[in-house]
Image (cartoon, rainbow, N blue to C red; front, side, top):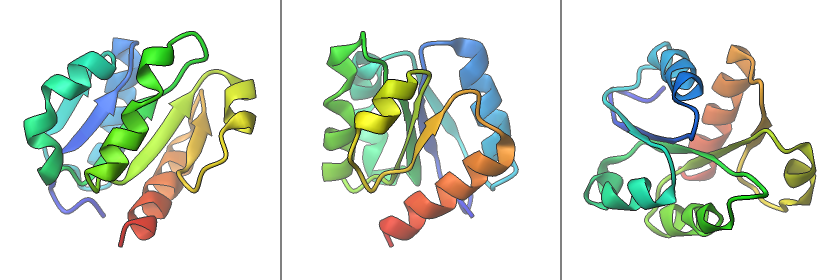
Length: 120
């Protein structure tokens, strides 16, 4: 599905990022770029044109991350948003798939397929 292309994972919790990476390996991901926050993701901007996908964590208490999905979308990067904040998932009106943690593997695969279909 991801055809060996790189994916950006923006996730504050390292173990969750590794679990997402493991899920993506079954979908054919190439290199995985990890960032803990929007600032670190922006430092990887030179890789954005090559990304097959970005999976971004959003939290109500981290307003500095909320502009990152718009920036990545403007760069043509398909997105999946993850959150632990159920209220946030209901308040985001978006065509972007939004997943509430914990995320089952089949749910992640479905969200990745939807994100890629939106951008194709």
